[in-house]
Amino acid sequence: MHPGRFPATRLRRNRRTPALRAMVAEARLAPANLIWPIFLCEGENRTEPIATLPGVVRHSVDRVPALLEEAAALGIPCVAVFPNTPRHKRTPDGAEALNPDNLVCRALRAGLAANTGVALLADVALDPYTSHGHDGLVNDAGEIRNDETVEVLARQAVIEAEAGADILAPSDMMDGRIGAIRAALDSAGRPEAAIMAYAAKYASAFYGPFREAVGASGLLRGDKRTYQMDPANAREAMAEIALDLAEGADSVMVKPGLAYLDIIARAARRFDAPVFAYCVSGEYAMLEAAAAAGMIDRDRAVLEVLLAFRRAGAAGILTYHAPHAARLIGNALRA
Image (cartoon, rainbow, N blue to C red; front, top):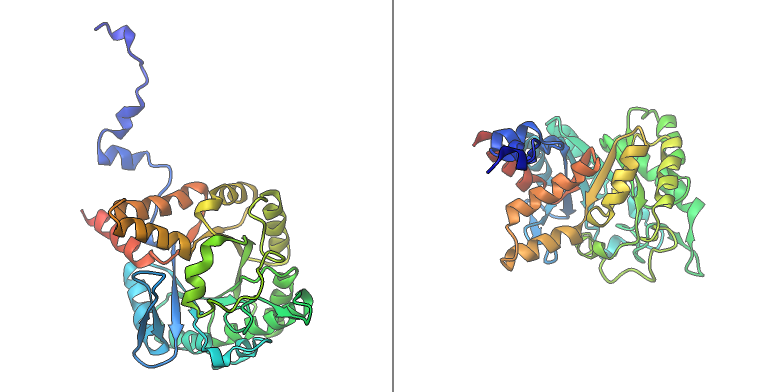
């Protein structure tokens, strides 16, 4: 056929081999982009399977150093810790959140002593500690008391920083909590402690497995829509992020992830600050269920989803697939 009938520009040329594709890749995924959430339980040398999160287990505190060593070996720079607080320690005021010997604080001290170089991220919220399952204090009318909750969160953040947290991650969505936490940390002599704000956290249907993992299933009275964001709103997310950054957040997070890639992309374009994504428990469980049913290639799907967050502009991703993904990436580099 006559050459003039064909286009001079052929985009397929750059796709012809793995080497060519690697040279022009617009987004890249590395273990350094991953944060590994782990769940804690009471006991010694103990693991507890989580039925709603296949392949994920709770760990007793004495296992934390080994997990951090595993993260370091895989190139994962940060581990986030979440407690499964026993029911008898849950109270309406979430007082266990302020106990310097709670699960999280013991895990942070164990992680700090391990000296692996892996950063420690601690959640700042009351829902792992309240008997009603809400992220804040509740009055007799069932209303979440914003300002009273913020006072408790600021104290919780200081206690976690003193236990060894490098990053405090307020996930409660109370108004004004970032400024109060920053002021409390600075006053307590912890100006180096960073804040990663759950700035755009939506009232999502994808949190169910997480609530099982932290022992909160069946506790929640009502819902969280008066403080977590409406899934319909995008401009409001930008306002939330702007406020958190103005109050002193060092980075921000969008949660959930897959259903909110547009929010991640919009935030990454608009703000000169690191934007993180949380690939939440329901998103993890969907991938695992589809893979178990033979509907998708698990390894390819995991990497594709995580790469989507990077393509959208996320600096990093909290994901329960972190160790598996890091191994896949390492194997690909060695191939």
